[in-house]
Length: 316
Figure 1 (cartoon, rainbow, N blue to C red):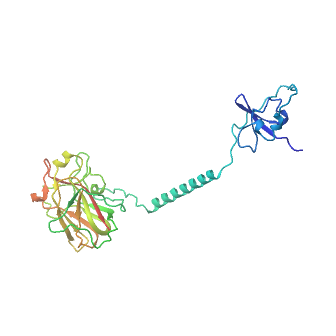
Figure 2 (figure 1 turned 135 degrees about the vertical axis):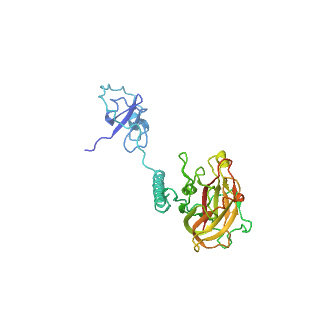
């Protein structure tokens, strides 16, 4: 025996049902009552449902008394679930593709991006971001005898990138008032920390920080001169007026690549490596002049401590 079709209906703004068609009159369901059953897209007036319309045709006969309706279950849907359209499916597929693409990108970053090394203590530091293009600088510093020009035999479409620094070592000023001054501060990305050394000692002509860097051809070095913590700190401490770049991997004493004059500013200054120097460099030293030679320094207003904030190596 086929089960009679059952409908939900709305009365007083609340949904009830389901009830059989034969019970419509008992529950006071007329042609204006909103009804719904499986297979319908939305709530519809009973008179507009094709299989129910014959129930609400004009009838001149007297209505038959209807007994009271039994209680109805309130657990009915307020709105039918429309079938999933093609547009919804496309959006779900697009969302899945986006999630998979993000996961793939995350895996690439995890496995191929050079993560930061940890600072290993005084005189030793490491650097990251070796694939980034070197930062723009405000001031160019070129020696009087070395021409500042581009590396003409390097592909013009290949921009110099920051070379990783694996070690930075140098004699330094003893810690004071909770501050330290080791060479690792030169490559920590913070211009308010410094490498510093006291110049009253007999240091000679060849002192300064040594670096072991990612082997490559140097294009230029970016240096921040002086103590960058504040204008007062900058003026009170000594700054370098001249620096020599030395390739320590050549011979016993190294090879002086270039010597340049520095300006008296904490803004970044670019030391351009002559295009004629094409050797790959791994060990670099920045050396400063004899402390007794006043032309090599901008003397501090209070202290004769040479301070350098940051150093960055760029190349191919």
